[in-house]
Length: 256
Image 1 (cartoon, one colour):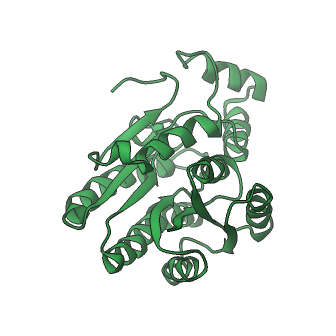
Image 2 (tube, rainbow, N blue to C red):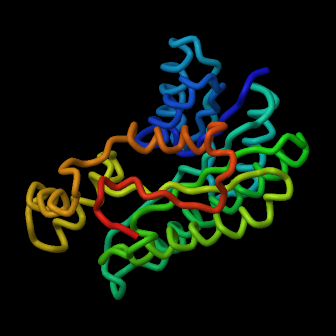
């Protein structure tokens, strides 16, 4: 029987890495992203590797679109096994200068989008009555807050709480809910964070990157594949007795 993994924000960065990694474990992949061009490219790359994959465009902030994604992907690719709430946005600014519209958009995507994903996936899992895995993107910024990332940190702290609450509620249905907390992972989103942070602090981007690198015990930035391995493990039978947890994937930036 085909196993299906739906991954939001899978058109680039960490989500793309997760899509490729879960494909290695035999999953059909629903590549969901707000950008239809990048989503289709990832899906095409997977199909070239003989993976059953299809691209879907959606804005996770729209609840109806998230529910329609699950309905359509299940119709196209088979029963749902894993849902990864990976889509997210960030912006860098001081608390006093942060634009209200930007804050609302960030919370709509990061927090509400994850909420809708949990709802849609859980209802499908309950319908199938075979359990399932929900895996959410939190962040190191949701474990220890960062300056200039107030709204982002708030959303990621909230996702960790949401993960715990959902895990408690859905355990009766044998649905596990966990999260991954990336540190510094080189993606287009991280490029934008470094650019804006450097601008505010009146330093060069290379200097900004050097400052961050000095905080990483293992001495290198993360790669999408580093995070994808953790997600693959959380999706695997080996993690079947783990729920409500969030796992730091940060190379030793912080210890909690």
